[in-house]
Image (cartoon, rainbow, N blue to C red; front, side, top):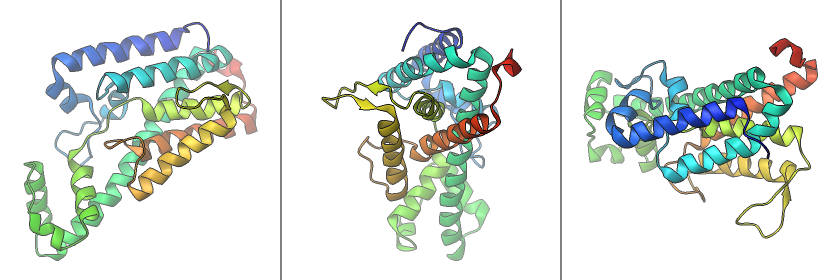
Length: 247
């Protein structure tokens, strides 16, 4: 952790502007800039980027922006502004792709069940696009299957968390022995231990549906951001990516 670097400062400002605008024009902002399922009528291509500047509440943006500053500042100082921004947005886009891919699985799993009951695809889309569904659907498949199907279509993703998880991975690989002082742990823990455990918990929550962090969290977006962050770091280290390429 250190001084407020250039890219981080601008990211903080943009996130704060989006947060204030969302507080003033909440429903419209969520409709335009959250990441919706591609088959949802609210989906737009720019949301792959814009969702990274949207947050669901004060604590959400507070934790994300603190992590961006705390873990991102050393990386920007080491890499420079251009390389840092490339990494940040690549991890965020990677998180969006993984999140959407998982939602496609949930959506098609539920859709196939409903199609087998005699409904047509346009009929199902029309029903759920109105925020409705038949409780009898729960008799066709498990509650989890139907709930995941409905959520995949109607619940948008917001937040910089996917990009932040990429930053966490990069920090852990660059400064593995840095000791982190966490509020909920009485002793410092090294980055190389804490960050893999955190990602593992998200993977566990995504697979099982049981979350110790609370509900409404896009766990696979976190895992996706971490995965893309790891791939980029592995590639850069393997190929000894030169900072001069980003000048």
